[in-house]
Length: 281
Length: 273
Image (cartoon, each protein chain N blue to C red):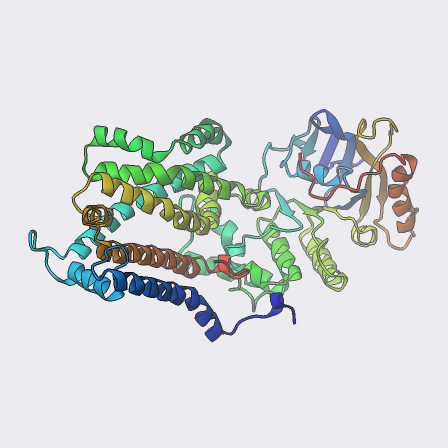
């Protein structure tokens, strides 16, 4: 990777441990503006932890993350949007209410609620995005009444309302059917091209990672102690540019898939079942 | 077809629901009948007829001494105490529950205290309340509050903690202040559960109300029951118990209806009791 003149995001010597057990160690990364970074790795390798640190939902144990040259704030802020696999939208608000909420926060500091003319204007403002995500007819429905794909379309639209510089996606399509995923890919790529934000997307689908990203980051452990499988954390082991579809990427999805599975073969005594994706400290 | 997959029709649901009630009344009527065959003046299991007359006397015939319709005076006074007590408890649950559930520093400061406080058997505080506040309304309402508020605060705080962290993070990325998160996210997510806590809190609330009225009062449903107990007046006590149960049932259903009306989103997915 060549040195980027003005990196949008710069990660320096990032390490994260929980109770002394390292999950991530010595992660270094420079990302230029407008990149679409897809992140893959084995279960429990810390890729979701990395995303949570980009969001400031968790803070690094060591090292730092710079956004436009300045350290990230210590808590989530509107400059970074997020879409989770689930619970991303507000279950007590209708589709339209979910989308005007950000305008209500901005327009009414005390009540957090807009009324009358300003509310109608806020609803007019979301007309275009409602149309784009195909939820115009469902504007007055509650999230429980929507399908999984519709909920995630709403979640993506809601995350983009504040026009964030960085959009973080934590396995956003993990719970969706393959056919619906393809539609979601189209929507996401279209929005990315129009809005030009930098995207980080964690996925466990390697083909999805190759299809969507301009850059593929693979998280894995480089150091192994067979006697103490938890002694070392993961870091970025592959950093592949995928930007030019004409020239075939130097590695194929199958190679990466093999590379991710490797550690399990190296340490046969590590027989525990993979952790779920929502590993929490 | 397996029995777990069979669903009763609407009519059958209603009929099945009525069966245990009708069976209870029948069993009582038969038992009462045979007891009165032996002793027509039996006080223990009065006939349905005599209970009906006693209830009518309490509800529609002015009391000879005070000129009041006793049932309605008792009902009004009891419901007023219950309502005031539960209103205070609900308010405390809302304010303390949200603060404890949402703000870690307040949680650290108050959660252990409330957890300890909720373990005090409320009835043991009743003498202290009578000594401090006298025998008037305040001590009865205070007993209801002390008996119900700590549990309601804890369950509300837990409801706040149960809000998916993802939603709170999302609100932060949409630029919400803490206060805006409380009004637009925490409060609406917690209110349906607060109503559930209120419905569950009403059960002990009735116990504390009746206890306080039984010990020191001059009106109220509990007072009346314990007053006529001296004359073994089962024909008054039993209808009063049924009346209290009916009031409690209606309050519970009203709250459920309110929850369904006001928080439709919360009742769309699953059916609840």
